[in-house]
Length: 216
Image (cartoon, rainbow, N blue to C red; front, top):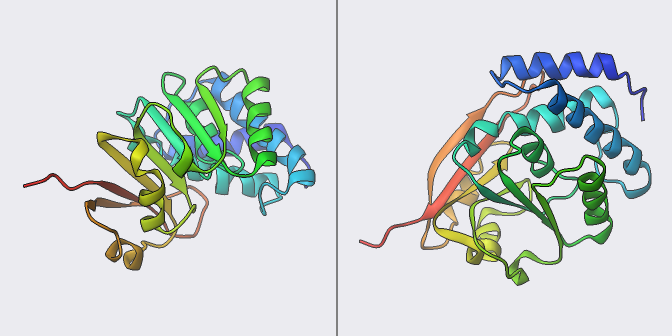
């Protein structure tokens, strides 16, 4: 891992948050950098992310997740499926301490990392589950999200039982996944595809919003 220059990274994060019109406290910025440091530390053993350079991690992980934050404005309890190293779930939990965030992954070493992050950053609004989402039996969520987790059809089929009646899926994707959208099974329908601009990232990012089609 390249040098972790905290002051430089904090400035990059502050500048990016400003571009995104997000108001984050000094404590939240510090937590986000603490999370990034933990991600870098554990990455050497657990291979949580292919991105190794801390400045690239700020852009491709922190700011990428923060760019989606406005989409969760009305969310109260969200589930991050295939959470991996905690993106976007941990970032959302730090930026929105009023929101309950649950994260699930099948890989124990990844959920062990997430549990350590929860403890070290004292994230009281975070729950971590190990296992397959299709087997998870907990109270339902108003928003279920994922970041480059699976084909949209698999995403809704595996986790649809956990979504509240009028809840919403918000899938984070790169290029708009038109083929995946066309294959969505009934009763699911895309209500919006929203392009995101991530500060410092020259790549396409989209949010795909999916809800149950109301019976006529």
